[in-house]
Length: 94
Image (cartoon, rainbow, N blue to C red):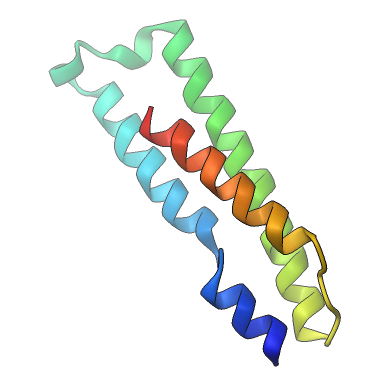
């Protein structure tokens, strides 16, 4: 219904796109082009932290989607998802 459409128009399953972006960055960090930046503990840790954030976002997205499919209104969680999506997107592009 209405809420499912709002979810799809809003964040949708944003975690998949964020995960793709992070994978591209991780692949670059592992390449010789960056001098294997992934070998830096700070960079490896940061990539892992963002990956955990994406996992948490995905779980929340799936809970919201499940609620929507059963006719429940997710309420403020949809707004929180949009905010977290923006925050994680910024972390991925930093």
